[in-house]
Amino acid sequence: MASFANDPRHQKLVGVLVPLLRRTCPPGAGGYGGSYELRLAPSEAEDLGGVPLIRSAMRKAAKELGWSKLETYGTDTGRVALAGVVDKRELPQEFSDVVERHQQARMRDAAEAVSQAMTSGTGRAVRGGANVTAQEFRAAYDAAATP
Image (cartoon, rainbow, N blue to C red; front, side, top):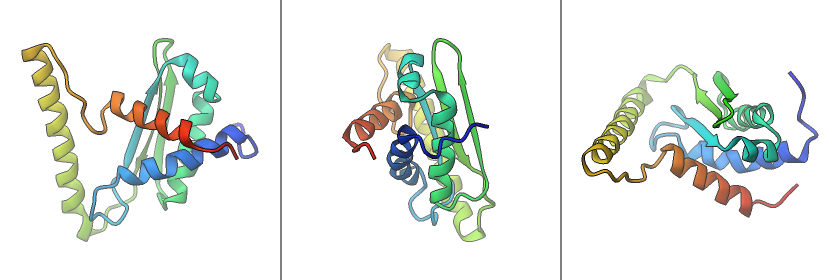
């Protein structure tokens, strides 16, 4: 795998991603249980340095948060560029219920949004959903100073 450590785009992405990843951890879970997925237009991902660079920045940002065991993924299908990271650390017992309830609430919100879209023909933004995540990322990236 190529090293992006000296690439200023990588450094900027890491700085932008750390707080976004931190926000995905359930409140009261001690920083465990986070995950982040970013879906962008392929041209936008290329402007940022490409999926491999984005994925590498996600890995580094997650490690800065202490996610010592994690999974990253990424692909560019030509229609969408996708990159993500998941905290795979074993949950301490005192946080497992909090993380489970948080994951169930996220799944319930997503299911309700799909149901609403199917019945009314209009969707709603869901925190953590692909559109909201991409908008939050773009705003944070645009606001960040280049290192």
